[in-house]
Image (cartoon, rainbow, N blue to C red; front, side, top):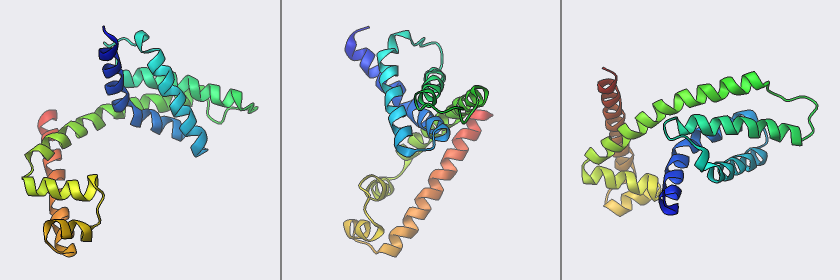
Length: 174
């Protein structure tokens, strides 16, 4: 596999796994900056060891397996006389997060499909509010409306998206 393809594969896998890895690390390490540092070290290690990853298995599970070791290492380096969480508890937490990651990715896929089905005006409204992070009033100025009507429209679009996502997931499960 050429380096560019390998880099792209790693990046795609990391983008999907990062929320689960972060959830695990932040649940295991109380200090925000400490947890942030550990997540960065995990990302670096995963990139360095990507050749060891078996693409037939879940990347999230592999990333969480490495994360568990890095969390334990963090507590050892800190010189704590006791680890706040047992190895067994850290393992169960990693297993739980890995099993939930599949559900999140199904919801994300459903969301992307539902976003593609939105009328252009609704999509623009969402982009202005959530991608460009404009306030309701700023969004209203962009589209020539009022802040209160933008809030109502956004509420309707969010409800339509939620319904679409639930229908897609229900169809998948049946």
